[in-house]
Image 1 (cartoon, rainbow over the protein chains, first blue to last red):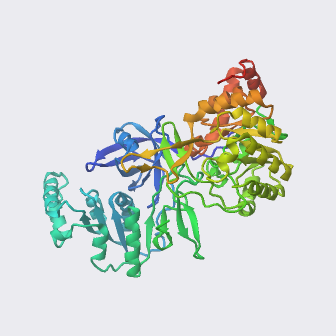
Image 2 (spheres, rainbow over the protein chains, first blue to last red):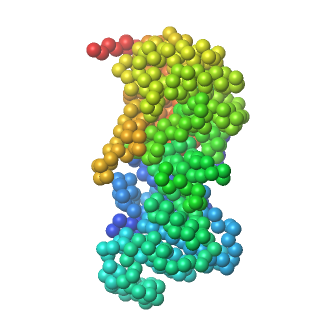
Image 3 (spheres, chains in turn cyan, red):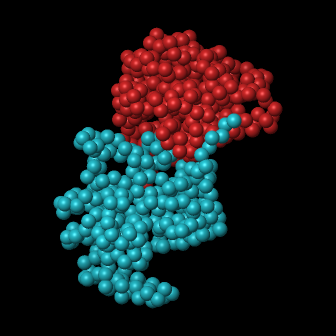
Length: 296
Length: 308
């Protein structure tokens, strides 16, 4: 009598095929996953524990055939428990959610600038790999709090990778630990040489991503950003001064993640210039920076 | 075997969704909402309400807090843009009414009286509204006055949704029954709070919010049981229902139907799953109708409890 359930359940259990620590707080989770996520979309992870009912929304970092990679930071009890899950175990994950970055309008040979701060960087990798496959030229501007992560993956897309690290970690200190990591790496890449190539002046690369963004003119056809709200607000303003619109990915505490509870709203300007509320989970998380009302 | 009748309206089964947790536009991606006994829309006011600033959501042990603040587009926009879609599912539509004052409740009820909506649910209980909302539901006289006023504004079956944030829920129930309610739905959320100890501030922008989910079920079941002793109105019971057995608990406590809220936020198809589990329970325990389950609950005996 009662069925009429659609064939695509909201969530399913998937096998963890890889789970490793990238830095002190940052982890990389790889799942055997059968759905297609667009760049900028997120999934919800269920811990399925009675005291922590709400699933965690995490942006998709990479998507390969049959695999999904998520990179997240351990911040609270939920992510702490998530970090303890092991390969071989099953984890319940939702279908891909949200509206991702608009990229279909870009033509082969055009160029894109990807600006990321901290945990805003992982979803930009999916975007970079997707754009690279469409032969869009890539430049990244990435800001890290402390240790870097995913730089080599960005490098592999062929992007011009620019990055900066917040003080008090001096680049020189960091450079040495990266070099020794490269030396002991089995990949055979002289990471140190790559870094030397990427950075003109070692000592200049301390600061915030907005400092790096302000440091030169970027001749690109499209801009995409992801990171903390304050960063996105500043980046939007900086790029507006350069006459460049930017797509930003917003974050908000979510309830359901699919548009029912109206918990995760942001304020944007509608086409007539009126302030309206939008749900970050279904209307976003990607919006044009110029339409976001930042001080809402 | 699952049919019930609530205040003269036939429901094909006893399961509806809790107001504020359901969006038909999203739900259709996973199931046919028409297979539920009724569909309950989010609270609607006479004019658009912005709702509270974010963060509006916080997790708690076995539940969640919400301080959405009844963001809604206003009744005119609702009637024009959302109601037709809801009515396309051929199952009774219940519209939840929100207001800051008796006049506002009457205005929105009058406006909806002109539509073909099957039932109205008077939301006097949401704890997120600073003006009026919590006042009405917490006091038997205020609850009676607003029920009476809305009663006069509409002939539609009128459900009054009770807040649990009171000392004597049965008194509120009696008051709204006497004032002309056709049914009672209960419970709304429990008032709660969380503090972020690292940043030393409340987690919710609104400071307090409504607690929902499995954590509140024992309170909800107890209150349904108490109200059932006090009134003869049909009761739509809700509060942390996550499974068919949870729903049966409410029916045995004296509810005539149930609503699924938070479970549907975790899994959009939860209302349908729970409906299926109720059916499975009935097969397992040989109940041929919802009324038989309620009858079994009556046979529990028990008496009206008296607390000092």
